Amino acid sequence: MINSNGNLISSFNEIPEEFIEQLHTQLSVLEVLRFEDGNILFWEFHYFRILASLRRHRFEIPMNYTMEYLEAEIIRLSNATSSSKTIKALIKIQFLPYQKSIVFIMSLRELHSFNKIQSSKNYRLDLFKEDYIRATNLSNLSNTNETLYYIASRYAKENGFDDCIILNDQKNLVETLKGSLYLLQGDKILTSTLKCGCQDFALRSAFNEWVEKKQKVFKLIEQEINPFELQKSEELMVISIEYGSQSISQYRKTTYNTCQLNELFSRFIQ
Image (cartoon, rainbow, N blue to C red):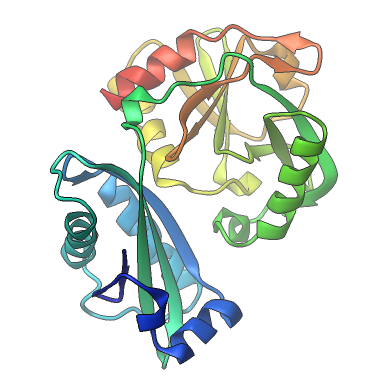
């Protein structure tokens, strides 16, 4: 079951042929979010990121694309997919240019609750250094560096790593293939600034705001991060809307603790 511009469709045969052609040929804006127990997690952050991305792509945004309208369409898709009021799902919304305007297509996949995701105890990563993304705001958009991320994911799989850290053209850390990267050093948490080229995920924005305003144990610092900081850190953590939080157990010969950042993220989710 998918939601195509407000029409619930159970088969791709029902989609007009010219619209399917757009899927193959046009740029699009993709947003991935979580739907749990009748609510869209961090919906306000997601909505404003969607609007910002559409504007940066110079798409004509329909007047009816309000926060309430898109939320209602997500809920309608959820209700049509499952009769359960406690459904946990990952929802992907893709916006495409179509006939001088834009249309959307939503799909839903059921999965575990956000706060019940089991992170891997042995999670190894490496730097991907075969190519680099540009340290510009254009890299904040999720579709800008898709090819490089795909190649890096193949590199990780071929070399037995669970993940890879992407670097920018200034040789600074950006993020990992799975999500936003955080480094714990004493009472400081380091994460890359958007100017480094990391994607401005809604979860990243919500977590950063919470760390800065709602807790007093750690100080969040957004900055350019040299790869040498990895070996100076006590813990590393990756967060994503799909996988939750994942502690890094090993980077090359450096091993890490895995408790403080995970506990912090659990408090944030609660």
